[in-house]
Length: 507
Image (cartoon, rainbow, N blue to C red):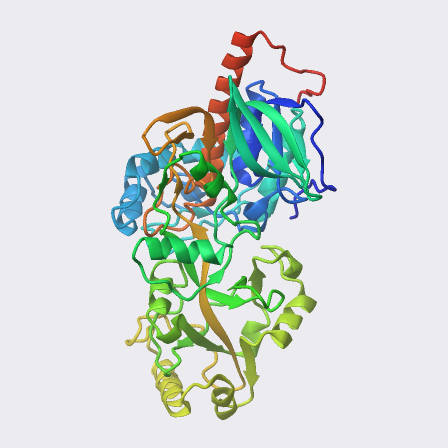
């Protein structure tokens, strides 16, 4: 579902003021705006693009939530302690586990109930992903796009003002708040005053130079990878807040998935697509070896396995019918997280150099460069295992039920690593207030969402259990919006300034 609000770029009127200015309009920014407005603050959202939603609008919207009605309906026994143990096991000691525990304890009210009260419905099936002891991945109907629309409509009903097509470039401190400088598309700069600012500008997964730089600065190897996530995720907020002396932490903790392909629509960039909806393929390294249980396609084991292969890439072999049902994500041209437009998927299959079709193994290997003898022997071995009725492949441990591509015709997709999320970011306290490099808390400046590493700057560590991105972004936005409104109310009361009410509407 696409965001409900899209307009031509706006200008700011001379002398405009908002109690709270929110910069960015993903779920973190929208939740911050909604909660600040619910607390009777006047709110303005400034968004660089001409539509709301950012990366959230193209996200699947899956959330890690503990002890939900859906889990109980399916007989799933979950607890905060169990989820926190899973969280700690994959973080490599780099996560803020106190904050993680707080999120898990509050996730039912802050995510499940919160979205339900906005008339969103949760899919009844709770999924279990690798590194989770039990199923706890919940997805709202309509994915991230539906959440963006619901938040925007609720904020609309409370008089939140929207300024689209303006990129915030500078914050100047003034007595009791900030002057926010926003550049228009025509190059001009508009300004608005505010008692408090909530920064929610997202991550930096679409800035290859920044991605490579944070790895190099940490002394880690720069891994060949594509750029995923939000198209506007260039790290603008990180750079702006760094200039103000804010503390950046865990910046080299990047979250990759092993199912990326270059986006042929952006040939001069590293922009990629994520391929979903395929679970039956067989992955071969460029030297012809299978190396992983292909059913684990997540950002931990799957990504690490692919990163260890020559060139950090592989060819995934399957039947043509499987490929023709794939979902293509990270580019709205191809559709939504719910549905890929069939004609555009066919265009991808025809135009992408990362996809090949062949009637027989010889032709497949000629097109991919895979060694025919080794691939042929592996396919024969798997056919024999299936014929013998084995449940799992003893080489990789993958289940053998449903495996396709053991006999021609064939299709193959060349997968590469794609950065989807940035786990580090601006450090904040428990209310979302920005922490400076000197350790001091900035009372009127807040950060939330992926800009703050989902929450706090280091909610996740080097790895994550699935679902700990979208839900925590929503949660951290709520915290920051409420705290910002408290600051604004205090400022308005002390100054004697009247809060504008003419454009306020009750829900």
